[in-house]
Image (cartoon, rainbow, N blue to C red; front, top):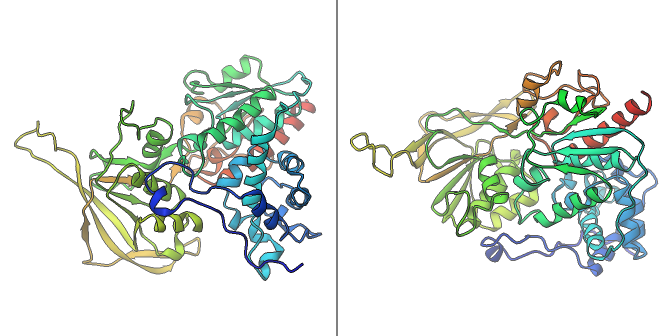
Length: 469
């Protein structure tokens, strides 16, 4: 049978419809489409796709199961390596990881590995009736700081080995960036909750509203009988541009903007937490978080949304699929432009004027690409005399985040780098005995799947450390 050259399209909501609701954009493969896509896999002997996966899922094996219609068997193959298959099938950048290594992609489009993973995980969640088997306890206790992708993965791997695992999460809901950062239309919160419930069924204890460094310290966790600690506290400290006017009302970090909408449901008619709705919105940045913020603003009722990015479309770091979706939905891309000042309304004659301090515009300057920087990307250079004002009343800064310094400031002997990331060795071990770390707390903001890979690595290191103790 001839191989189909293109991967099967993902069914999705129409752009003019989805731009006004928070329902999931991608609708998922039907069984018929999934089986047809699975047939495109060549089942290569050297399995390059596995090397492209940060958690080393046995991709050809799970697709082989799919070809026979054994979807539950396919899920079991995936779950041996991944604690969050339904999440990864939705948000992982497969195009730059497993699919980029696909042998079929040399001549044709690669196999839609991520779409198949999503189908298998969703099939399992819809049909599985048996609860996971809780392993026999091995007598060791491990604490996990943070219920994000790295923490959940580390917890799952250790629980399957019989460890008594407790996760301490600062927010009121487990999931980390999966629940506060990624919008419902890309990752439904029910999917994350389902994955967390699966870990609880393995015996993992999840304690929310516990801020390690405030409520408890890492030293106190050891005093409470935990023999090892994994720090997966993420990178929740937003970066700003340090330009005039960033303190005006209507200027948000992307973290705050998305957290208010995703986790605190500010889009409701009578929200507990407020958010700027309607008007004209400028989102500064070009990554996935910028796309999420821009598309969220549109769904919150903005009449016009701009992406302001200092490089060209070719350098845009966001996933191609997310950029395409944003363009389809009507997001206006202002490329090779950079903000220099947030403008605001000020009436010094009447400090009680309710319009005081609100954003009225964003002053930008046009850029051109100059010589390559240290990373090989052409450095954007301002064009003299090209300043202009973008008429907006809300500005969202989405230029990255850094690890929160709280853990470092309250834990003796924990070394960090110049960017605040916790320093670890090849096993995920920090400078403090028994303390491991991984994910964004180490690298700064990165992908969900890379954080999961770090969680798996640390779980292996913790197991070897405690078993050899």
